[in-house]
Image: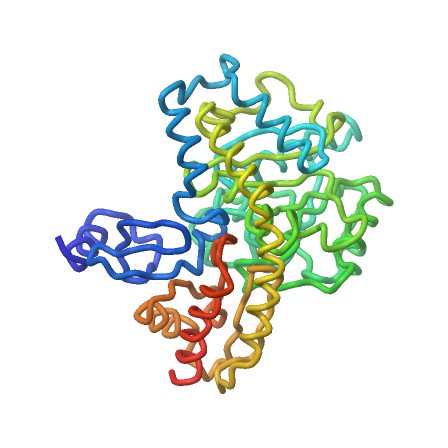
Length: 399
């Protein structure tokens, strides 16, 4: 079979819920992937930051193979010998007291929402509480999560939607303050809005949100599914600011090391205490295979200093991108290796640039039509950054 045959199969038998570039990948290692014809590409998307450790990192693959030979699934009806070790390690690494494991990022967000609602109900005696979210948010695609999206397409045809959310402007602490009422139980935000186009709030924004939540006695929920685990040059993006630690931290994507999905919520024992047997769960949540993989994924991030690499090379890449002389570029912005190149409307949109970059051997994807998102694996080297930059520069200056 050749590329067009695989594309025909996808078009005929799979749901058309994505608009992918017409690249059919068959193999990957490190920052590199190969299509079915053997062409080599640099992966500058990292599966939306799920591949911070790169494709098939040998230490993570070894841990996966080892666990496959022992035990893969138990369900939470029984205990297993990996989950407790993993929970201890992630809590020690992050400074939180307890962890509730799930699978996908959206499940992690749903879990945090359930914890926040039940905490407000049981501890603050607030029924039907309201959670403040931000315009242009992206937290997943479940019915409840799309209910508080400001993107109309995400909600179109999926009603009735879930009530209990109030949308305010992002990067506007006054908007949050004005929206708080006696019914407010929490604030849910992203430290950087990724799907919205790598929108970075003003310095101090997260600190102000955290303080406002403390002063008002409401919970601060932070979605670091994309930004966490080194992507922005800190282990978590909120660590770029002082006193910005949330009450509930949602993690996922790179936690699975690009091998197996795992997500979850970190919080205090007091907050987590409202969740009792039967309140919430998942057949696959905390399974021994996922947690063994996640243990190795965290070890790689720390021991191979990938967070530091993200910080150093992210600054280097942003500086180089800002030297590009192109009439199509409106702004370059980013933290660590989480970078957006926003284009002017006259450019015709980011899609055509992403398609040309793919032809030249760099894979990335447009977001919100006008932004090229760059998020390579954190294992990338300076030499590889330079190689990718020369292609990006050529495409943006010539296209």
